[in-house]
Length: 277
Ligand SMILES: NC(=O)c1ccc[n+]([C@@H]2O[C@H](COP(=O)([O-])OP(=O)(O)OC[C@H]3O[C@@H](n4cnc5c(N)ncnc54)[C@H](O)[C@@H]3O)[C@@H](O)[C@H]2O)c1
Image (cartoon, rainbow, N blue to C red; front, side, top):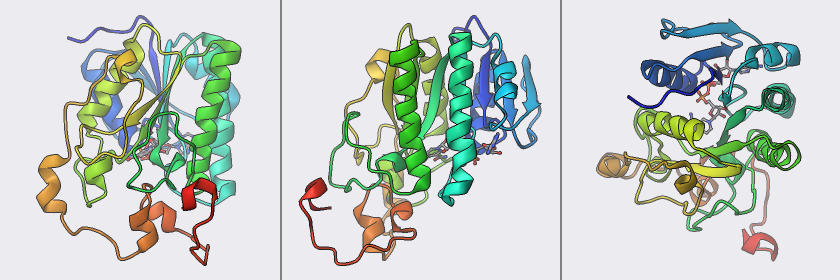
């Protein structure tokens, strides 16, 4: 059995797709979890867990939920591209509430960031963890801001944080792009385990993808965490062949479909900034 953290672990977004996976996976390891979401938790509660319905916009509620916790696995918030005003509350103010709670509890944070914080890098670029943020929408912008918030709380307050730029975490890949970006549920749960138990993480970035040979991503802090993905999208290659769109913008950039949403730039003349993207 894996080690069990000394203190309870707070999981936000627990009623969401990944929150449920993480709650089930860590609950099965015997971890004591405090689960929260604005929506009702749809599954049977894992043994040793409790669920509290709360809004990330409610700072006092977040402080109370985090009391006594040593780790916050932050999966809650707007998880797709939405208008700015919808993203603002849960993803910016809500994240601030999470970091204030972590600061008070001297807890560590795992932030479910996204490939959409760097979505306008071209697919033929290999990226390291210190690449430029090139968000592909208001959602991706909130993830870039969230990573920067983590950096600020580390340097200013010593709050450790692991920023996981999740690619595509689904039961299995569903299109050709996911041969590069897929993160299996088992690899995600193991990543949460290592992010919680690693002796020291400071403020670091992890590319949240399985061991896909078609990856866009290289260096990150996985050795510090002691995490290595065990799964791979490679066996799905034949099934996914030809599962592409007819949109050249979508196919050009790492962020895929999100880059093409509300895309109004015209001309396409390569400029000098950002390597002529
Ligand atoms: N699934 C992926 O492939 C993927 C990829 C990149 C990043 N992520 C990130 O991982 C996290 C989880 O993703 P998911 O696929 O499970 O998304 P999801 O939408 O299924 O889950 C997000 C949860 O957050 C909750 N939530 C939204 N607003 C809230 C609020 N104001 N207060 C409290 N809870 C609120 C929702 O009710 C939902 O249950 C998200 O932060 C997402 O941005 C996921």
